[in-house]
Image (cartoon, rainbow, N blue to C red; front, side, top):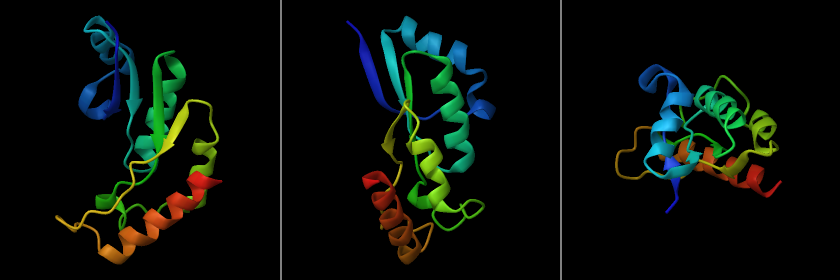
Length: 120
């Protein structure tokens, strides 16, 4: 049986090299992975990883916790990721009213922007 992990988080600084990380998953039967991202750097890293492995894909987005701090790039710049073949989702986006690490209004602004980008 093969499995598809539809929400995996990968960080080179925390998880080491991607190929051994992915191989461990494949050895356990997880042959496809969607790398859920939380901001520009993580999206860029995940795009590079997905492009290196047949069974890996990635999303492009800003996590609600990062909505206020992810300001280095204009959100429209994420279209460069969203238009790539291995990018299969706009995310990780959403609204977090429990922790409210980023202000709700900023979360809504980022959420609306990424919904629009996804529709494009």
